[in-house]
Amino acid sequence: MSGAANEVIMHADFMAFVMDEGSQEILRGWVERQGWPAATVQMGGVELFGSMLERSAPPRLAIVDLDGQVNLVETCARLVSLCGQDVKLIAIGTANDIGLYRQMIGSGITDYLVKPLNNEMLDQALRQSQEKAQSNSGGQVERSSKFIYIIGTRGGIGATALAVNLAWMMANEEKVQTALLDLDLQFGNGALALDIEPSRGLRDILSSPTRVDSLMVASAMMAVGSKLSVLSAEESVEESAPLDAAALQAVLQEMRENFDYVFVDVPRHMIATQRRLIAEASAVIVITEQSLVGIRDTLRIKMALKSIDPTLPVLVVTARHAKDRPAHIDAPTFEKNSQGKIDFTIPEENKIALEAANAGKTVAAMLPQSATSKAYRAILHHLVGKQAATEKKKSGWFG
Image (cartoon, rainbow, N blue to C red):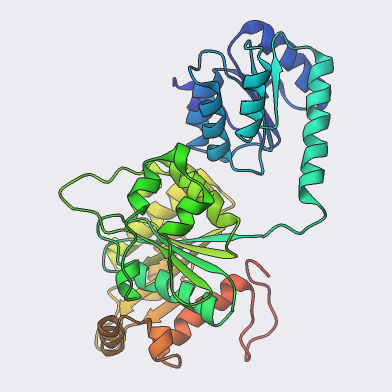
């Protein structure tokens, strides 16, 4: 994957990735008739499409050339796993076998066209993909899942505590189906904070993109009550814990179909390696401290997020400060130098946090009226668009 993957921007409606000049020529003429730019047709096939999917969200409709692939059915299944069920995938190629065609359709793609292409077959394929999308919806309202990512500017700042408490509150106070995903496979504390055994299957899931399905994900998740499910791990620190981007996309897709809110505890180093993951976020919460290092790293993380998606809502939360432990930098100075306001501050209540940790419960569950719980709840209400009883009416992100 050459630098082309970095130069081309994925079009939201349509992209085509072909392997021969004849297909490129006919497709570029066809896309211009549809009103799409000629740059939506690229030479590169599956490899280029896959590399671009690591950096940006897929288009609504994609045409992908399978020539050069050894196992066409497995390739189709992997592309469906990468893109999710909402994306319409039309494969093209030179193989002309009815049995193979049925297997490829069974893998989840929308259609398969045998080259050479022509305008009539492309028009028909587009029409059928639109009809299939309408029939699949069946008039039902799809689940509008929200992915909330929590990123700490440093270890020990309280990112996991925030993720766990928000997930618990969403499930138990808002009464919606909620998932908590801890992506620190070796040192994550999501399961420990809720006094449950970490999953033994998460590593297998994240290293096997072609095998991910709803049953595999469901069996690896741990239930905490009727509305909250947790997916975490505790892998050996003596071995590397690979995280396949395609497998992670497949996990997110399965969660999208089963949960209303998914809270993801994201280690900060993943911003660089999992840009496609970040692109899936509905919102990101950056938790930091009011210090010089906090200013620097908050600004760096915000700039990195903006480079992935300039429209991504980012909430800045400060923590680890109390009356006997004042902030190193006052709020106005912090906001000026980090180029943005502090949205919320979580008070430091060490005794309460210690009691909750030792009991394997959330602060929100043990002491719902504590200052810490009230701060968590204010953040939660902002996410769901609720207004506090004493506030004037205003819209939240998802109101």
